Image (tube, rainbow, N blue to C red):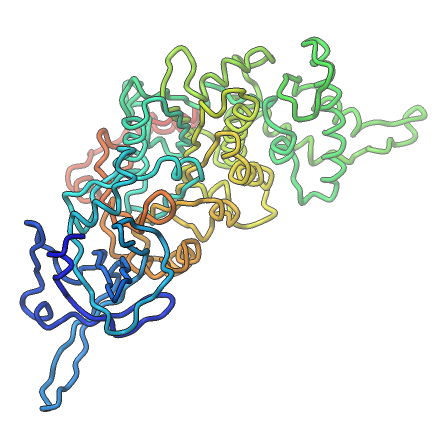
Length: 553
């Protein structure tokens, strides 16, 4: 730092503890003149989110202002004086050579000077990340400064985007992906789009997207098909067996035995010598149903004696038949395209952007998938990405990131739910995926309802506006202890403004995320305009037709 700027004293420490510090702003900046000019830049002394340096002897601590208030006192002449006080969160030390290191080894004592930080100092702190040129937005405290993250830390060690509804999560996801493709033109990203926000069809059936046409591959889960035979055994159990049923364990054992036999038969035709119940090869679902039915109705000794499994599978058969008869599940139960083992290569190419149209981004539109099986389908997509790179010899040169929108819906915190298998699969990716070049970016408006295991594996957090006290407290527990107090500012963030914490940034940073171009289809419904200028009538028959055919426009 330059001697000129280090000489600009703005306050003194009044209290020091392991988690934070408090300081009193000197009178020069306490009343009507809180502005200070540094290198042609006007800074507001004590502004929330701004940076300061605490200096004492050979100690230099970088800190962030996260709270400001006023307090009255009386001097020796009994005159009332109003002090401006600030709370500081220390984030690291500035060494004698000007280098910045995270964490604080030596703390100053009360009375240490508080000095202003300008653009030159900010640039010195962030300079080692600027070489990546992975810019995501502008610092809230210095609007002319563009922030670059460390993509190795962000994508290589999982990350979370957290914020309440309307805070700009879809905005942030879109902007982040757009910045990623710009900085890394050979990136591979799969987006689980639960609400059709990132790619959608307009009224003429043409695909619209929040990304450049040559960068994105739109996949409608219904049209593409997600065949049942690619699902793992655990996913099939989630789909067909009610675990609260008294005979659930018997159903699981019998289904394992039947599927193993059916897949072994198919394996012989493919020339495979070893096959397991999880091997992704075709088997006829009708044959699985038939064998359950036969065992459930079996009688011996000319029909006088009931078989050992007689009437044990009534619930299973009813549940499976209801799935088979529901047209909404045809893309899963009755595939027309991917109905043989050899079709798997084409399916995987679509997933990872290597089909006829090569693309960086694969958006899987799950908006038309029945909500009760979305967790299973999301898990299947995640598992296919994981398995693909697990067996990919070039995995280190072909890393994949899976963006999980509304992650709390299928990676919940609660245990023992219907889709426990799906949850465990996603948690397995979080724990093991980075070894094989598969990372996860979880997006959620309710972090308190999201799997603790999943969040514990995230090393970086992009936190948008969060007003719920429970969610704020939960986020506070996720981040490093020294940075926890910064989460108190989450309720004051603007739309698209975020607090970035963790390994992807050298210090906790408040940043205005770039406005995405194009934007996602996530704008709130404009009630005012709709109720003033909306249609006089609607085609109710068309609505009913779309409802019955499960078609969304």
